[in-house]
Image 1: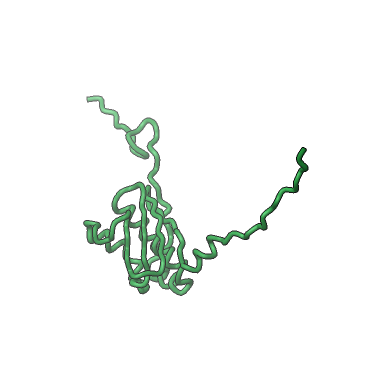
Image 2: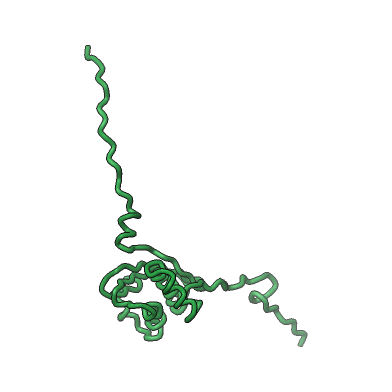
Length: 153
C-alpha cells in the first residue's frame, strides 16, 4: 500500500493590478449621452490621432460633425492625445454631441480642475449631459401631447 503524502502548495504570487498600470498610462473610458445616442471615449497620451467609430476622423463626411467632435480638443493641446470614440444609437448629430461630452470628460480626467473650469466657463454643455429625452406617446392620441381631432362634416 502507498502512504498518503502531503499536498504540495505553491507560494501565492500577487497579481498585478490592472488599474494601477492603466492609471500610469493615462487610459480611461468615459461615457457621454445625448438623446438616444451613447458614446464611449478613451483618451491617452499619443500623437494626436482621432478615431471615430473605428475610422479616422477625416473619413467622417460632414465638416460640421468633425468640428463638434473636436471642440473639446481645441481647449487644450489636442496634438498630444490619441482619442478613440465608439458611438451607439440615435442619429448623426446626437452621436457627435455624445462623443463631444465623452471626450471633454475624459480630457478633464487627464488634465484636472483647471481645464474643467475653463470648459465650464466656455460652454457648460461640454461636460454636462443633456437630460432631455423624448416623451412617450400616450393612448388616445397620435403623439405625446397631440390629440386626434373630431370632424362632423
